[in-house]
Amino acid sequence: MPKSLWSKDPSVLLRVDSGFQLADVDPNATPGTDISKKEGKAMLRKQARTLRRLQGKLFADSTVGGKASMLIVLQGMDSSGKGGIVKHALAGMNASGVVVHGFKAPTDEEKRHGFLWRVRKRLPEPGMVSIFDRSHYEDVLAARVQNLADPATIEGRYGRINSFEQKAMDNGTTIIKVMLQISEKQQKKRLVARLHRNSKLWKYNPSDVDDRERWRGLQEAYQIALERTSTSEAPWYVVPADHKWYARLAVQQIVLTKLRELELGWPQPEFDLKKERKRVAGA
Amino acid sequence: MPKSLWSKDPSVLLRVDSGFQLADVDPNATPGTDISKKEGKAMLRKQARTLRRLQGKLFADSTVGGKASMLIVLQGMDSSGKGGIVKHALAGMNASGVVVHGFKAPTDEEKRHGFLWRVRKRLPEPGMVSIFDRSHYEDVLAARVQNLADPATIEGRYGRINSFEQKAMDNGTTIIKVMLQISEKQQKKRLVARLHRNSKLWKYNPSDVDDRERWRGLQEAYQIALERTSTSEAPWYVVPADHKWYARLAVQQIVLTKLRELELGWPQPEFDLKKERKRVAGA
Image: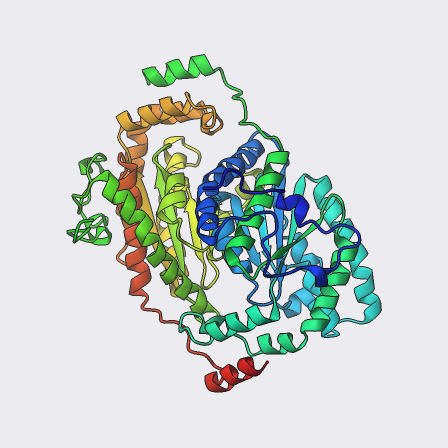
């Protein structure tokens, strides 16, 4: 195992700051670390315990009135590995404290409301971690490329997203927004694989290939979204994702860093510890 | 690793059938297997992959209109290890397809409704696994022992629970009801440990000891509930739980067996596979 895993923390290295250009990101790179795939996978498993402990503190804190919670937004092209992040990067977490929401094309009922309506209902309760597999950002991504709303409406959404997220943060929610960036070549490889494995076929949708034809347009929509909604309090992280192990490790590290920044301890008992020890011993 | 893990499947061995006596269960036993703790823990990890695959099929099936889902009800005295079941026995599952609900004492709003109101809202959607950490059964357990409702009301609840569960099964939900049975001695050990670990103190509630004083009463309430609500379609399983590794392995096995009984395959594609392979290759 390498002495130092990260030469620089991915929560700094992969953060979208002003001047960021999505086109400059190399999906095949592994910024901040020079470990091997094997070491990376071992590290992922090893750190799962730390993740569980920190998440446990977040949860425990809410039982004594703490308001802190966490929202992890996952975006990326089809087959970029969003599901794998949930399965592997965040796998150490206790399921009792995690809720995963997959957002698909809005239903008829959802369409009758504003685009944030269905998302607002899924914000995390205190102590909880909510994971969005796709999110309200589709309403400025897919919506933009496929002209699902008129341009002025879409223009207005960036600001509404920022206010919406600001309000959530004011309520104690830490927001981590992750875009998994894969190359066209890697995506083709994954889609081909999906079409050759019986257990993966159901994940394939012919429209995935249509999205592929809209690649450039979608990347442009991402660039705009990243520019307008990466704020200092709720920044975006663009994670190179051609190497699944790297993307998972980087996301795990960002979540670890953000949980640590909450500086939560274990709640102190409100009961008389000595007395209760005696009571249990005698019961 | 032993050649045959189970001499008899725990879904048969631990099932509550007519004539069952809770008092006859030895919480320290490990029925159906003679493997060691170490082997048991290794087996638990190994079978997590199988669990994930079977759960994946359940989820995938719902994407082509399948209605099957699963509800796992966890009951047991305080510190019997319900949380550990979620963490360890069911750990292989993909979080996207699992929702855990912890039921505490009902809120004022919940009290204004019937006791099944808050539970009904948490039944699993098609393809999903819902886990109840405590459940509607508290309304015939704690409620009975602490006289939280008048006796006639409580008497009426067993039948209402059975109809409620029957309706859920008619909608495609497989119900697995697990009671983790620990000994008084083991519980004392765990409560003492809880009071000596900083990271566990928040889980301790002085009322845990009150419950301890109501041990016999609660066990009687369990006996009645098991008798009246263990049906052939939705039986109870009483799992000896003094050995955590055994309880986890047994519950994992019951869930595996029940998932297998659904006999779900991977959905067949509705698109033209050959054509799509060609399209992807050319895109």
